[in-house]
Image (cartoon, rainbow, N blue to C red; front, side, top):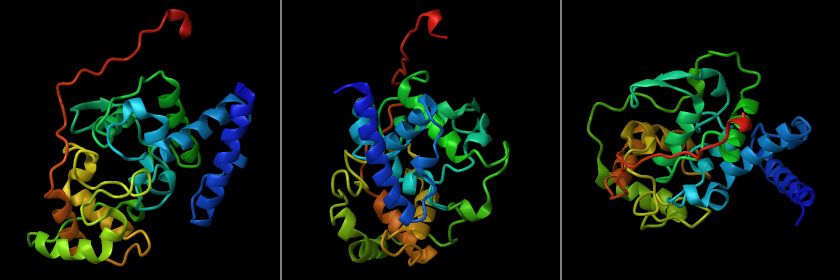
Length: 262
């Protein structure tokens, strides 16, 4: 297959995906992309977010897509939106104890949420993901804080969660997509625990983040229908289960390049 034909097929596929997404309120439209290599990179970044497991298999151990946590490919408010993210980097990161670039944050997602490997910072995939996030953020002023209406992490209830009650809610409201065993459907609904899920260092492995995400976005067919207390209990039930352990001493090695590359 020649390169021009491959790009044409990708454009058709992305147009179909975006058409479906736009009906759900997403803000990505491939017809509005700039012409040429930049537009192609942005479109590729979208594809990587939507089909991460298939297109970046060497870097992903979990059976997840970026879009499982960044809903509607990162365009849904209170659903892990990317809009405005580009202008908030570089930023101080408490976990890393240093100032990080956007590429660092993306690498974290692959290491923690994908339980995988970090793609090379100067590689085609990383640049495409950054280009896509920059495109979504193009109308947001640099340095603008994330608005409150777009955040899903909020203070948790004072009382401890009730995972037993959460188990009942999970069976009634969540199991039809994620399965009673929490393993989901490959490439359709993500596994919430076990060897194919995110590891214990991921953002979603924190009770406050999963609680907020569940409250505003789940169940998928009735988002916002769970109270904060119900989401709190469900999240505590999910996070009681075993999942991969983050390997903090694993080496991250990027590819060497000749100086003429730059």
